[in-house]
Amino acid sequence: MSEKWNTARIRKAKGRERIVCLTAHDYSTARILDAAGVQLILVGDSLAMTALGYSSTLPVTMREMLHHAAAVARAARSAMVVGDMPFMSYQLSPEQALRNAARFVKTAGADAVKLEGGAIRAETISLLTSNGIPVLGHIGLTPQSVREMGGYKVQGRQPEQAKKLLDDALAVEEAGAFAVVIECVPAGLGERITNALGIPTIGIGAGPSCDGQILVTNDILGLYDELSPKFAKRYAEIGAGIAEAVRAYKADVQEGRFPGPGHCFS
Image (tube, rainbow, N blue to C red; front, side, top):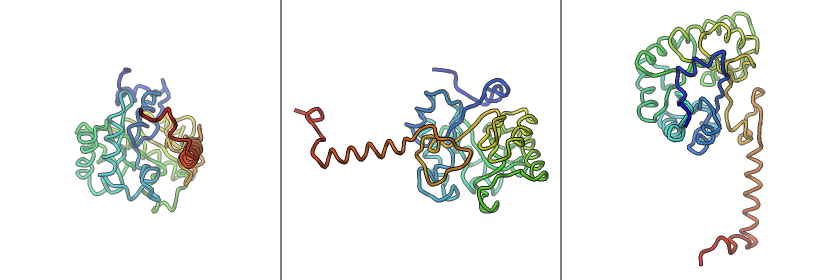
């Protein structure tokens, strides 16, 4: 078994090794990602949509996130597991965030947590990290604020917006985050932020210059068609393959071909 990825290894990877990140919400998928060498597995609140059928990430609860994070943590032998703190589990106060982040680490077995926001979250990040809970930051398009933002839109195209995002990234770093996700910003801004930080940047729609990349696993496998972001690339059409297999099984059952002699006990 290879050495477990942790905050120190992630930090040292900056400028040396591209960090590969994907999402998982169940044991079987996490085992596959871990065996394939993914360095960081995010139990993302995107599971609200891909696994639970909600129309956005907002309704998912702490209880649901902890349930899925525990399943993923049981599978990961090498990858670092990060639990995504759901909407309103950390916004009320840094103390609320500390209590809930501790549940991810102590109860679910996650290695770290992720929360959205830049300078506004600096105090919270500082409190968590000073109490031994590693934090992955998240700036740019922050899906939990999608209603306030007016939809899923590219962030930082205007100079003042770009400056604010750079300031946010620096604040997250200074507060103690071990890395920061940058979502849906122009590629040039992604490069500018990456060059300005001493911690790794993990891009999702932020261009090729980030220190790592993250995508939703359901998107790269063709398992989720309800939302097709421009930044996602499909590497397989597993959904179509599953549908074909189910149709073949249905036909075999209805026409009496399954179970056959090889599937029966004497």
